Structure formats: structure tokens, C-alpha cells
Image (cartoon, rainbow, N blue to C red):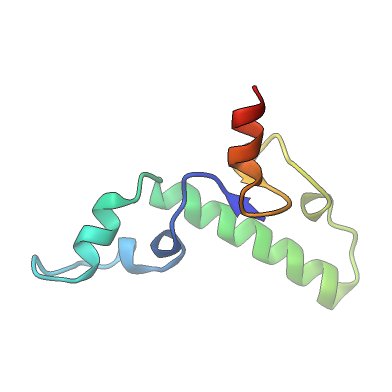
Length: 88
């Protein structure tokens, strides 16, 4: 899975913490163009679906393929969201 527009730092809890002006995370967060609340929701929903599938043996449609609730989530190679954009 790839979340289009997200960077590695988007999947940390750093955006929710008070940071000092000299923090090394400030430039990384400034360069990320992705809403932290949205990212948090995506992370929680996909993690819960993963654990329900693998620990509770439930069928989770969220893990099968693209979801209209999360159009920014792509399945396949990390280049998938960018390849689709170039095909249009």
C-alpha cells in the first residue's frame, strides 16, 4: 500500500506533539503536504483491518483493494500512484 502525498514522517506521532523551534522535525513536517488527522485515520483503519484479518480471521474488504473512503491509498508498487497519474 502507498498513501499518495505522504512522507515517512507523516506516519509518526510527531505532528501531534509540541515541538520546539529548533526541532529537527520542523523542516520535515513543513515539507510534508498531508493532513495529519487524515493520515491518523488511514493508519488506524488499515491497522485495525490488518489485525482483524490476521488475528481474528475476519474478511476485511479494506485490505482487498482500493476503497472509495480512501482514494489516496494505492495497492501495488510504491510507484503505482504516480504511474496511474502519468497514464491519464
